[in-house]
Length: 306
Image (cartoon, helix red, strand yellow):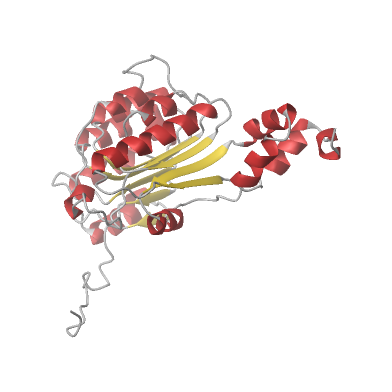
C-alpha cells in the first residue's frame, strides 16, 4: 500500500479535491480503494458540452462564484459533416446524464452547460444532496450553422421541468438546495414554485431570461416563507412586457434581501428602482435595469470594414 493510502479518508478526500479532473481520474485507476476515494472527492462539478473549443473557453469565463475547488469537465463534440442542432442537443444531454449519474451520491454543487435540457434532467433530479444547482442554457456567443441568432432569444415551455419539481417520472427529487441558478428557460410559475417548495432553504435565486414566468412568480415569492429568508435575487435579462414597475411592489415582501439585480429588464425605470431602495428596501447590493447616467448602448461599426 502506498504511503498516501495511509492518510485518513477525510484528509485524503480534502487533498484530492484540488486535483484536476484528469489527474483525479488517473488516481482512481490505481486501486479499488483509490477509486472509491476518487468517487467521493467529486463533490463540486462544473460540466459543459460544447460544439467547439472557443465556446468551451467562453463558457468557462462566464462562470461565477468561488470555484477554487470545483472540478471542471469540458467536452467538445467531434466535428461531423451535417451534424444537426437536434443531434448536438441529444449528445449533450446523453453525456451529462452519464456523468451526473455516476457521481449522483457525492455531488453537492453542480453546474451544467448545454443548449437545451432534455434527458439530463432525470439524472440531475436524482442528486439528492445538492446544495447548489446551476443550469446554463444561454450561449448567445455560439455560432453554429444550424442555429439562428433568434434561438438564444426564445425559451419555449417544456414538460422537462416537471422532472425537477417531482411531477414527472419518480416522485422524490432533491430538496436541500441553497442556491439555484437558471439561464434561458421556459419554466412556468407553477413549475418553479414546485421546485422552491421542495427546497425551502434556498437563499440565493438567479433567473436569467426566464420568459415563461409571469407576475404571479413575484406575488407567490413575496407571500412564501422562502421569500422571507431569501437573501439574493437576480432577475435579469427578462424583457417580456409584463416585467415593468409592477414587480417592484413585491420586493418589500422580501425583507432579508441583501442583493437584488434587475439588470437588463429595460421596461423598469432605473431611477424609480433607486428611489424605492432609498426610501423602502435599503438593499446594499443593488443593480438597476440600466444606468441612467450612461448613454444608451451603441454599437460602433468601422465604415471601412467589409
